[in-house]
Amino acid sequence: MKKECLMLETPDKKKFFTPKRNYSKLLEFANSFNCEISTVKLQDGEILDLTSLAEAVTTEQSCKRAKFELIERKKPRKRNRN
Image 1 (cartoon, rainbow, N blue to C red):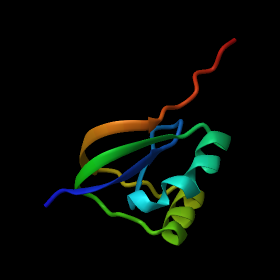
Image 2 (image 1 turned 90 degrees about the vertical axis):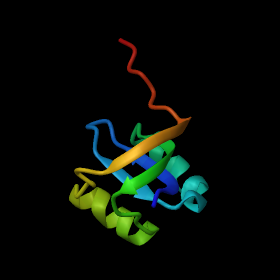
Image 3 (image 1 turned 60 degrees about the vertical axis):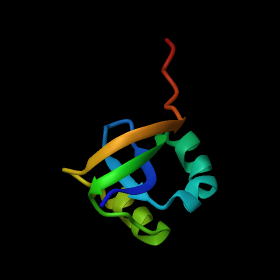
């Protein structure tokens, strides 16, 4: 069964999934570290609470083979301008 959640994608393409209710709490982090936040339908992968998400991001344990369908890009990554 597909579950709707947020996907946090880092600049090095690591993906992490968390409940949609965490959106406002992730905005400052996403802006500071140039991460993208999207709404997705997750078919196969783990949805992390904030504590587990923080641990996974700092230890670089991303969800390697998650299957998901993109619904909406809520906060795109900033492009570097030289």
